[in-house]
Length: 165
Image 1 (cartoon, rainbow, N blue to C red):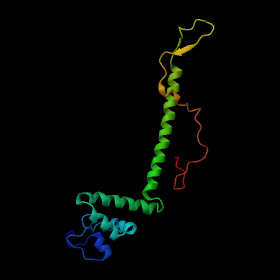
Image 2 (tube, rainbow, N blue to C red):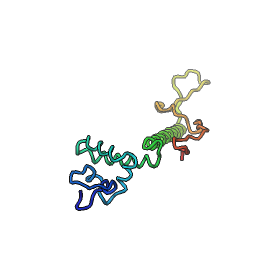
Image 3 (tube, one colour):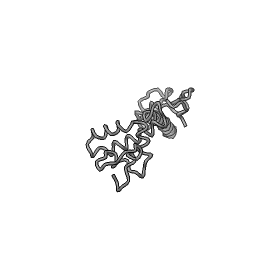
Image 4 (cartoon, rainbow, N blue to C red):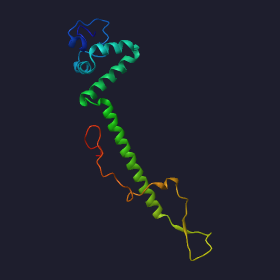
């Protein structure tokens, strides 16, 4: 309990805040919305049990996690923070694909600018074969941007809106 003011938990639950209140260090009276949100999603009794089972040095991190998860659950009641994680994973996949396409385009441009050198092993001058001066990199398997086929269906997330910006 900080001073004479009860913590946000005791204030919301309308009870007397004791000096050994489990909530007081993590839910100060000047931020009542923080506890109200966690209480709405998890319940005061469950939060109290979770905090009591943890060593004191881990409780602050646990409260931060509970607050984050409560915010996510209020924004997305069905998927909560899993929905946010899924959305971010889809963005990472999309960006990886864009990076691969860009790398392929760079490789194609570099190959077009390389001077060609005749193959000295060819005996018949009528069947001229040319090799690039440098050996081809192993990542030549990337398709150029003109050969990439994009999915014609829009990719939808679990939120139901288009994931590709």
